[in-house]
Amino acid sequence: MIEMVLHNMGIDVVRFYSRTAMAKCPFGREHVSGDDNHASLAIDVNSSVWHCFGCGRKGKTLRSLVWQWCKVFGLDYKEWRDKCFGDAQIERIEIEYNKLLQSSYEANGNNRNIEKPHVTSETIDYYLKAHSGKAPRYVIDRGVTLAVCKGALLGYDERRQEVIFPIRSLPDGELVGGMTRGIQKSPNYFLTRGFKKTVLYLEYETYNRPFRAPLIVTEGIFDALVLRSYEYNGVAILGSSMNDAQGIKALTLSQQISGAYNGYDVSVVVMMDADTAGLAANQSAIKSLQEVHKIFPVYVAHLKRGDPADASREEIQECIASAEKI
Image 1 (cartoon, rainbow, N blue to C red):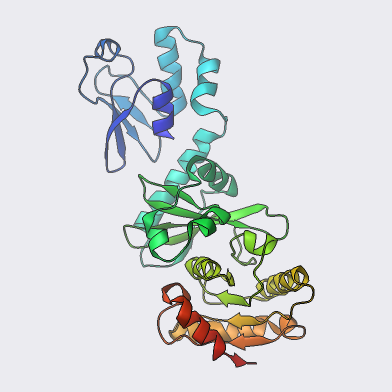
Image 2: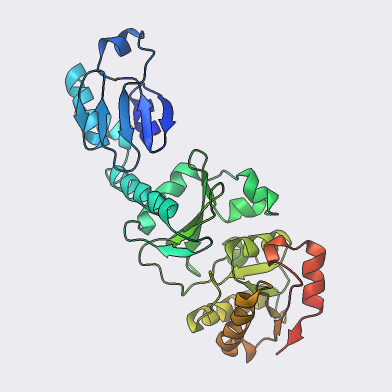
């Protein structure tokens, strides 16, 4: 966001120091003449508070920066506000998202779902518009194909090195929340405000164009995306405990797959991580899939190691072949 606003003002960010963006002063003579080789404008990426150490001007928002800039050069503020921001809500959304990012860095522990009070699905929607269509090498190296990245509408911020996974409801595809993951520091997962884990995560094309293959219920997002890349219908319960609402969603999806292939007898396979939490997740899933079990066969598959995202295609096939029917 900061880069976009400054770029529209004809200024580029020179460097980042921790949480501070540094750029040339947009007001001083040195900048106008092109002689300023020093970055004197400092902007806090979390709060958008800014201060130019060259000319002394300062403010609390990016809008105030644009307003003062327009005043100095006699420009129409409303026109340039629209050029710089586009949407009147963007600056507020950016501040909310930056707070969320900071909270993720400060959170203790790894691989935890952390609900924070500042972010909304609107934030996620904006972030996706700004960063969608990019697939970091990290995701590809984990076995997710480019086609699945596109179908999942993944977002990626190269500077922050954060991958974002939108979570959409079935069957309308409405954005109901999102999860993000850092790929450099300890990989923290966190959810948008108010999001309740009553949905199943899936690459949305799994609903629109499912494979003639089992529906595999897993714990994590990467598990679901890798299984989709292997041409299975993978979904994730976003943790190690499946609830009844997710069980009903699994039934809906099973019926969708069956209908897409003229009554195909879908197998629903529970495939959790090969650890203590995974064993508990198996029991939780079996209980929540009772309604599914009345219509479709349900199996439990046990991995020999790790999680589905770490398994090869051959290991997944072997695991499914040896699954136990319940």
